[in-house]
Amino acid sequence: MNKKQLILKAFEDVDADMLDLLLNDGQSYQDVHKETFVTELKSYFEDLRNNRDYKTDFKAVQGMCTNCNKGKKGYSFVNSEGESFTSMVFEESDDDYTDIYKCSSFKTFDREITEEWIGIHFYEEDKVNYLPTELHIRQQKESDRAVKALEMEIKAEGILSKNFYVPWVSTYRHLHSIGDIFTDKSYRYKNEVSGYLWILEPLAEVLEKSNLARELWQEFIAFPLIDRETIQDWLIRADYHFPYYKFATEYKADYQQDLFITGGIKIRLSEHWYLQNIAVILNKCSDWIPDYNPLKEADNYAASEDDEDMFPF
Image (cartoon, rainbow, N blue to C red; front, side, top):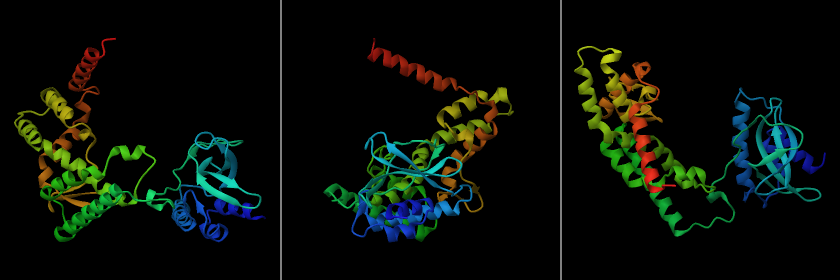
């Protein structure tokens, strides 16, 4: 087997150690140094081997890019169930590959892919030509400061209270945006703080409705009889103000310890007590909630009328 065939076989065998030997030192692949490229593959391949739900009998199936690098040829590595762990363009010379990079618009020539997995990913800081701007440097320092403050609070207190995480979210929420998902650029320094914000930002936002939750709870416990006809109007209003709560919370509450755990972080339960009760009621009575909430429909109708006023054509 020549070198190119050995490289393809190493991908088929999910053998990153062999790729470490075969790929060229000092060369970049997918715009990152060879060492970074192989390290990411090692982690990915290890996950593949340890996941018993997947068959790892991968074979290289030839194809080409249909978009950004249209016409460039490469291979998708597909198992016997038609699942591909990645599709990559292989730019080549006579006896070697001059570059290897992931392709998200890949079309195989003679084999249909039933499922394409995410594959490897690199951050902007990993790239060989990365030059941080003043904004990047400032955001990196902010991200480090945010993570350090949060983890020191968790270490000192063992649990997070709203007095800490509500202002923390307010201070650092600009470091995390849902729009980041739809950009080609992601930064490692924002990864950890974004993970914490994914967990804490929704909790901080829902606490703004604590007073409303308390009012609804007080109204609920005043009902002399709990049946569908008696409380349906209440359920409609509660579902309107707290959408998705009827599906229950993702965490389990420990009332004795006054905490619940989400994303591995302990949160003070008593500060969410009324909100937790609303979630329990909506979940237990979810069959009594109409599929189409009339209050939400009224909002949609009002919004459509506003659109017609703005664009009367």
